[in-house]
Length: 156
Image (cartoon, rainbow, N blue to C red; front, side, top):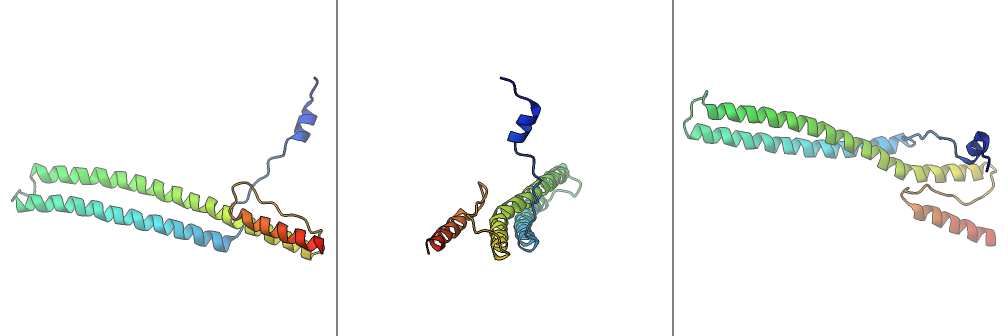
């Protein structure tokens, strides 16, 4: 069987660049809420980390250790290590949740954008046709309801 490059290229779908932010008002607000929730959780965990080490310092002071005692040096070293780890992991978690917020908001805004463009096309004289959403998009029942309504209108 002889296959040439041109016939393979015609059968494959060309790469289509996707635009992640298609409804900026909604998506930026969604990403903001996601990032804000992540920031609140990270701050609360950091405060609990500070409280933990301050309790150890209190115990050392209650026991009457001198300020330069090895106990306090150890506590300060551990606080530094935990703060560094916390900063790295907090930044990573914040970034992951912000990016996840962008992709989830895209899966919400995408179908609504698609349906609005579809209806605009029809109102501008385009042929009424069924609307299809991508696999993984939220609200597939919206497309089903629209297509059912279109089918009922065609019966009339």
